[in-house]
Image 1 (cartoon, rainbow, N blue to C red):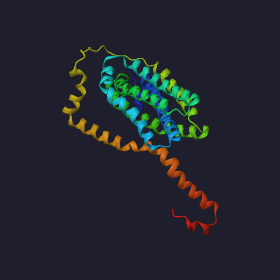
Image 2: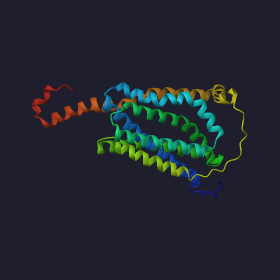
Image 3: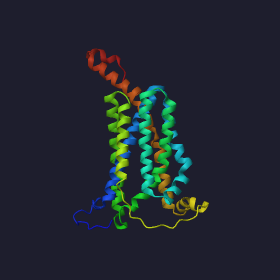
Length: 279
């Protein structure tokens, strides 16, 4: 992985390592696919049930597997080949998108089947998150790791923004979630094939026996490093309070639709009739 780096490319130095570039392409594809899928699932479920509670249950279905499996997933990331694990996780995401497409095609009103697939997504995410983070240090040398982290965060944010935008346009254009799920499936498969091209140069690591000490080592580290504990706690509350975005389908279809209806009426009718509308 060691290569000569041109001095004029210090800001993009991480991309001089092909494995890092391929991994970032795969990560962009998978994050965009998941964001597209998330938009479609929220709209589809709300169109079927018309209950805001179901949007909260979707988030709960994805959150609970992570809470129940976080100790196991972290230990798995430390003990097994991370490239293979990431590939398996991406295959799981592609499978979930394909299953949602089939459900929409064959049983479009079955909310329970959609929930079952969302739980599968939560399980796969529980393993994908620690494995993806642990894979990054194996793609670039230690001296270029900060640059890799910066680009990793930027690409994630770009996919997080573009994914819902693309998913929303596809949902509106096709007037349904089928096209979104099909596109998410194809995008996730592109991520799988990209990941297969990664070739890691790793050193053999000592295998420690599975004990409660090794499983809970992360808790011990966080508790003894108060700065890390503070940062994680702050991020936890930010994520909890940011969960209100799950209600966007309710806002867009009920509140925003009403506001746009009033605006259209005001435009279509004479000005003398507008005084009767209290905005």
